[in-house]
Length: 258
Image 1 (cartoon, helix red, strand yellow):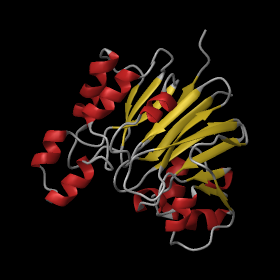
Image 2 (cartoon, one colour; image 1 turned 90 degrees about the horizontal axis):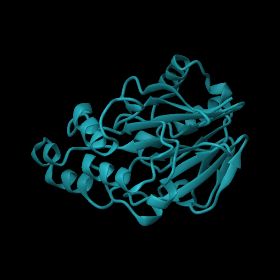
Image 3 (cartoon, one colour; image 1 turned 90 degrees about the vertical axis):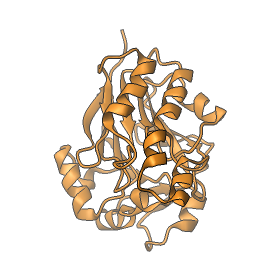
Image 4 (cartoon, helix red, strand yellow; image 1 turned 135 degrees about the horizontal axis):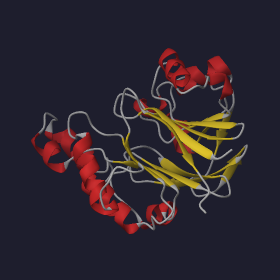
């Protein structure tokens, strides 16, 4: 069975991504209530009882808000960095594991390669998943791009990439000056042009699925995000998905080439 991935929802009101290979089902973040996460899992044909683990990228509520309650209700192991664990304020977890943001570890049939990112959190990281044949990169909640991020995401078969805001919409939009500075700053969120510039630096010859994720509903539009990425990919919608806050996106399989 090939590795595949899906989203329960992506945006400032909650995030959760599923990565599956065989009997291993991982959830990256959970910013939804238990009931909402369970409902969205059912929509994707899965249940919380099937989760092998929850991996947390950082402690902001739209990523960690539902983790502890979902984990306690279904006895799910939770993995997070020491910095994220230090900021966790939602009670004990049934089974808590730490990891180093620079060291690979495995859960079931998946190998997880964490990598640190610049964001205004205690010890934020993102992940690349591998089943030994295909690689899936996930990147959201980063205000700028480092060389290590480029090396980590190079040559992926699937890529979920933050396209949080359009710079003009952010500058002229409803946010306060302080919030505009935070979102657009070095430790904030990637803009459409930043995401496109990162994509242009990667070896994308193996890329089957590209997902624009974590779009702001006030400072971006799906069309603007799509245009920015298509300027790099050469146009066309083949393999390009816009992750939605309400619907997320359905399962995408990473198949062996040739």
